Image (tube, rainbow, N blue to C red; front, side):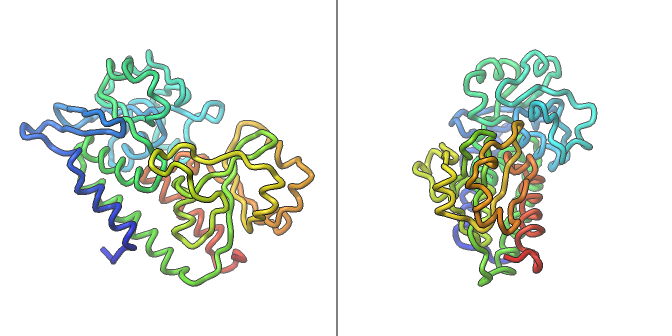
Length: 307
């Protein structure tokens, strides 16, 4: 593998050498998830369920079809995985999964977003072992893919997915080194005040690593990862005046785009506002994070993009 930036290479080394996951002496699998809880699997899981798009994404990337997956509410199953999820049972939204359906599909592992399953953790663990993950940062993604690879009995394939992703990041960064990439804001919300993401959220972290300046700034609590960002007034956003605005999906009309200030933002007046797919919201999976990189390259790094 080509040489990696020091921070990325160190992160990967910590992930791959972590003592909290691996094979026990009796060939069962012992893992420690992001709650600090230890899971013991008698053998590699073959029927994973996903209370997260990540769970479905990583299972499919590793060649194991999930038996059930949560959705995006009214938007349904994640579009980018839909063709591979035909016939897979739906569990409803990730913040309120249908545990009766989960029990009925008899999973041998549940891969979940930690913050959405804390209240139901005991009930989920009564059904199957729970691998609860943070899934916020690039480092979270690397670690989660490694843990899922261990749980599904495919650690070498998981390591290869991480290697390929990091090489892709490095390749794009080197290709665009020294070019003026400008400022960017990643926004969501359907209210009158948008929500802007901090630098540590996976998509904004990738943008930073590729040379962009995320106007959301650094998180106040980098160790916890929460909050992911903050509400920002249009007046404050105008002062930052990003060159590019990326909009995450929302089920409601974005009221903030009706604000009289909106047309005066540089990104709006120059046509540098882009609607991003759902996988930008939950991009830690091997398939999603590669698609995010492809989107950045296609929209923002192409020679004719104007950046």
